Image (tube, rainbow, N blue to C red):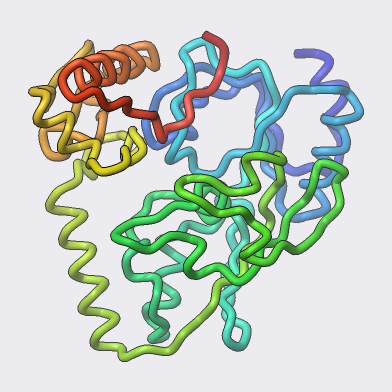
Amino acid sequence: MNIYKQVFDGKNIGEILYDEPMKNHTTFKIGGNCDVMIFPQNEEQIINSLQLIKQNDFAYRIIGNGSNLLVRDDGLREVVIKLHDNFNEIRIDGDLLIAQSGALLSSVSKLAINNSYAGFEAVSGIPGDIGGAITMNAGAYGTEMKDIVHRVKVIDTDLKVKYLNCDEMDFSYRHSRVQDEKLVVLEVEFILKKGDQKEILDNFHDYTERRTSKQPLELPSCGSVFKRPEGHFAGQLIDEAGLRGYRYNDAMVSEKHCGFIVNVGDAKCSDVVAVIDHVQKVVFEKFNVKLEPEVRIIGGK
């Protein structure tokens, strides 16, 4: 730990926390401690952090609000750069809505909807921030990031800031170029299209009702645990396999939506992984379908 303090203390990189519990930074409320967590406030501090990390050959990762992360119980032996409340400005500029990567997708959607811009209604309830949404090409109810993004401002592995147009992002199902090249998402420009306010609000309320009535939003989770298998719905397969409510310690397949695993108390990462493994095994045995996790499981085994 001393080497981290020697490198980071007193530098222009933002707030620094050492030996920080990752469970405080994921929506699952699960995970051991990371060695260091840095909270940059601007692009300069992000680049300064990355320069120090690279100069000292430290392992690192970027996170947002941790809505798609499951951190292992022994934590992360690396530096975590968190871009969330510290990096979340949103503004409208002409026919573009521009958001920093730490802004919540729900906040971005709300601004668009309140100003009668269409296209954000379906994704307004996704519990992630913009950086994570771009990284995973997040989507819901037929709308994905690739459908509403104009271009993305990133830092590449050479610490150069550049813009990538939507067609340069290699968007596909739950995938983008960010994952392949370890890019850091700084800012995203979204295309704005004026629509009918009543129709937009009706659509928004419809999607919200669907989400709140069918998803266990009252319990810690990571959202959908598995990617959608071709020709199937993961939740439906899990339900038909008789796994609704399957529980291992405090990790449980949601009674409300079988595509979710929820933390009903003080679940450990190992508990959730045990449920994931069991679900994959039973579904494969019954339907010959391999469920691939959408949640990112990080840290050493």
